[in-house]
Length: 243
Image 1 (cartoon, rainbow, N blue to C red):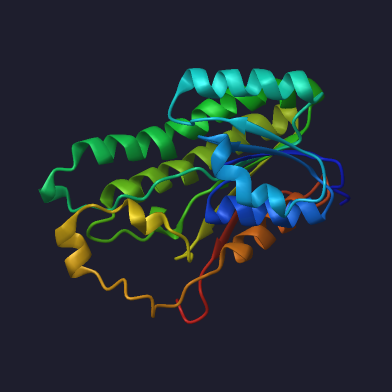
Image 2: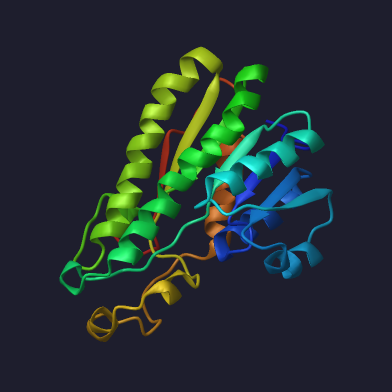
């Protein structure tokens, strides 16, 4: 399906996965809305873009920030065709080490953040009786491990939320919903980890198989390029060699 000129909102557009998605969709001629907590963090990305875009400050952990951002977006464009929820954090911790604020922030960003952006984008998609919401989840939402309890729970919530969103929004409003669930991706997310015991226990030496952000960008392009009658519900992507 032709996606040229489609309006695509990307949260966390300054990060490794978000910026790779932006670069990929820019080549397809999409009109990009680049959302990030600070405009300054988008500087390097903007140098690579050839088509029109809108940069917007949006902190998905703050309801007013998200609401204000969507007001600005919808004052600039007529409608939103695609919402790609990328923004997320991954401060892995052992539960015994009691990193309460990090746990709460993980839910605030990873789960509540999607509820906030859904609230912002849904009126436009309902009005046009069409749209596509792509949520970047993780295989960690299905394959739990020690140290990944809260992060895994947040991604499991995204997977469940995506299924429920399809049940409610697709039949009545023709809105597609896709959950993309990558394995380990070579980004800086692990920089969020402050649990020193976990860091000492885990081997993050860089020799493990990893996906590249561009792999996730191709997946996003694939799912949003499907014709109207086709919805890719879930897409799991793992590094070659990982079962």
